[in-house]
Image (cartoon, rainbow, N blue to C red; front, top):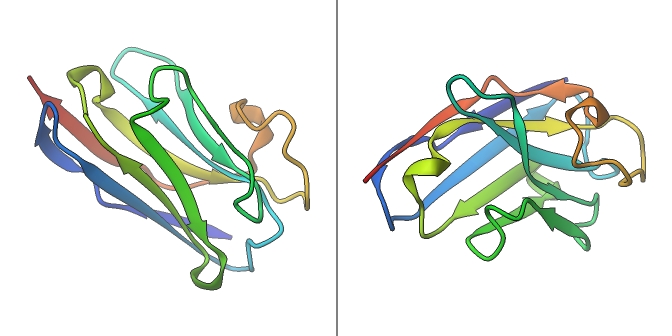
Length: 126
């Protein structure tokens, strides 16, 4: 199983940015997927999670109303649409998948996930 994240970059506060995460090695349509981020000197933190059919989503309070997680199971791809970006959103963003079918409880914990992407840097300037 491999995950590869794309879409990071340098933007200004208030801008929007979209991240993608393409999976390979198996079909992910039965698995919960999520996004996490890690800022310099800080621990990795939960950003968003999405159920296998996309019919359930959860967000960290810090991004609720600004970020949207979605997925396209036909393309084995996870997305994160980020609006109204703030300097405090600056971090390396990681996608992850839990290879246990139809399990969602606990999806805000990093220990819930089995595979991780390599991370993509998002930098928001003031």
